[in-house]
Image 1 (cartoon, one colour):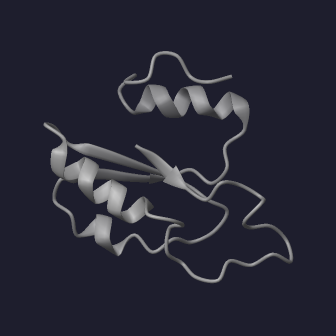
Image 2 (cartoon, rainbow, N blue to C red):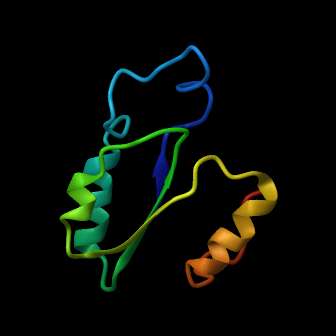
Amino acid sequence: MVMGWPGPIHEAEFRDRAGLMLPGRQQELISKVSAASKGPTILVLMSGGPIDISFAKNDPRIAAILWVGYPAKLEELPLLMSCGGLISNPVE
C-alpha cells in the first residue's frame, strides 16, 4: 500500500507540517489492511520529509517499509516492479 503526504500542497519550502504523523486516518487504514491481509504487507511512503512510522515498524505483519520521497513519473514503474509487480496498470 502506498501512503503519505499528498504533495506540495501540504509540505514545501516555507510550508512546514505541524507534526510527523500521517495525515487523516492513514495510520488506522494501514493497521487494518495489514491485519486483514492474507500475506505480508509492503508499506510505501511518499513524503518530502520524515514521518513517524513507529506503529508500522512494530507491526510484524508489515514485512517491508520503503520511503520513496516524491518520485517523478518515470520512477513510479521501477517502484511498482520492485514490489513484485502487484500493480500492472499504473495511473498516468
